[in-house]
Structures are given as structure tokens and as C-alpha cells.
Image (cartoon, rainbow, N blue to C red; front, side):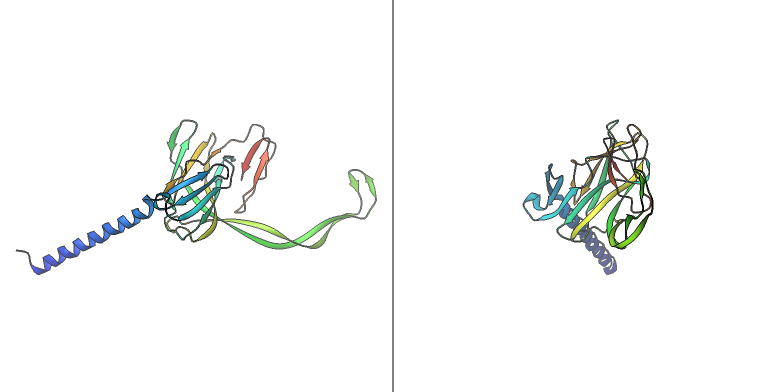
Length: 235
């Protein structure tokens, strides 16, 4: 015969298991009924709960081109999208699939999400003034840079996101950063708010053919989109 202590311990374990099961069910319930509508013109996905019959949770828009050409290297920005989270949501970043478009097979690739933070700093504005005599079309004497007031200069910083925290209500610009290798032609398929977004997008490496020149930006402010020789470069 079981003692009162043993029966009490069994009851405690049973209650704990029921609570854990209920917690799992609640987490699942937050995701399984989410659905999306996609606008191919604006490249925007709208996430709605209750199988599309409930309220909108977020609007997620691709900012970078559909196919981004990226110079090989470590920790490269390969895609950029904007999330307008209409509510605070903790389980935003669920999964990421990478597909090698050269072979048609899935691949494993380490990556991080980073949040784009833009600040504006006031810096001196300079004007190039020539007071001398023009010798020829290429040579003018008496020219110098003269400070002429101030201007606002944009500075971009990318800060890594803790994907377990989620997003607060509001607009956040997010970049996907990963290492890019020679020969890459990779499709990335994120699952956000419990919904897979298959309409986005890919990156391609190896900008050697037709490359005229590029801006190699250093540090955290490396976010330049440029068309070079018919290619789109996202640094």
C-alpha cells in the first residue's frame, strides 16, 4: 500500500506533466493557425491568425532585389527585409531553409539576423571654390574646399538579433548575414510568425564577369546597393 507521501508525490508529478502539456499546446496554438497572403508586386507578405480570418499580425516586405549578387567573404549581407509587426510577438524567427540552386539540394549554412539601426550625424558641409584663372579644361588655379555650413550624414549599424526574443510592435529592418563562397547560388526560405515565405529570394556569388568596379564598404555601415555592369551588388 502506498503511503500518503508517495501518493502526494505522484499527484505533484501528474500536475506538473499536465501543466507542461498545456504550455506546449498554448505555444503551438499561437502558430498553427497563422497564414499568409502575398503580393508579388510589392513583395510583401501579410501574416494573419485564425487561418486568415483573424487579425493581421505583421506585414513583411522584401527590400533587397529578388536575386542579389554578393562578393564572396565572411559575414556578408545577402538579403534585407522590413517587418511591420502589428503586435508584440515573441516567436517571430522560426526556421530558415537554404537551397543550393546549382544542385537543387538543401544545404546547411550558419547565419544570423541583424537589425538595421540608422542614425544621422551633423557634419561640416564643404564647397569646392575656384577663385583663380582657368588654365585649361583640366587645370584651374586657386581652388580649395571651403566649409559651407553643415549637413546630415547617414550612418548604418547592424546589430545581431536574439531570435528567441522576437519583435516589439513597430517597423524593423532586418538583414540576413552569412558567409558567401565561390560558386554560391542559394535560395533562402524563411519561416516567420510560423509561416514559410517561399516567394523570396536568392543570392549569387562570384562577381568577376563584367565587373567594372564596386564600393567595398568596411565596418558595420556596409549597406550599399549598386548596379555594376548589369549586376546588382549588395555589400
